Length: 305
Image: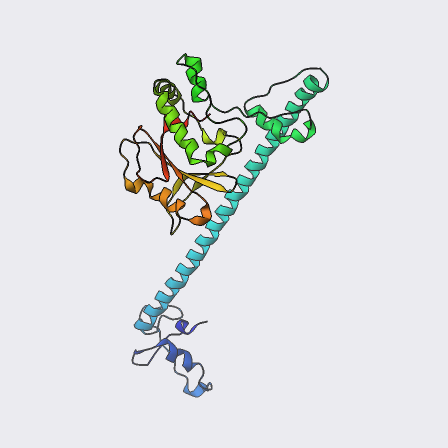
């Protein structure tokens, strides 16, 4: 019991503060039957407490209401926690059931594989979601299963298929090493200008579907650089060995100095080892006068491979 749980009043009805009321119980005293005073209940009052001063009765009722609110709030928190536990249990059960279903499907898939592959001299090509399930049990197929990731059609492949013309890949197939040189990116820009007609037609066809591109270059690490307290965001950071290349995409008609803040801030950090950056644009015009920044139309970037 706390001090605020004690309440008292004088014979004249004057309320005592809670601390004084609590200290009354520390005073020595004795029960004297001859001096006992009978307290009569108020008119119409029944039961214990009905004869107490009105002010004291009001405080008692207020305290009772506060205790009741505390109990109700505690019960509400308990039921809320119980609801969360129930929801987590249901989610866990659903997750387990889903995994069991996947395993059952995988077992069925392996049964088909055993009949087709293990018992017959055939080769099987598995695509779609079934290929993902095969990966889950690839250990049992060691030496007999191979994964091939099929990226989107390249811009030069679209140009060839649509009959727009033939273009050679600017990036060799043996890795992204040449991308470490700024001159290679300038060469790519000029390559796009020299083949503008084919590039625009192929890019128009590519835009009908769209696809990821940078992540399809083998050996190239691509990551997003989020904003930090002292550093602005950069859309992509390419990592080749120990060197990094920040890439900012501004696919719009007008680009100003503020649009290259992220690139410039990243390049100015010596520990990032980023001697130059790429600004991917919509139009052919050079969008930055910073000699460290290579402006490159998106459609020209897609001619890299």
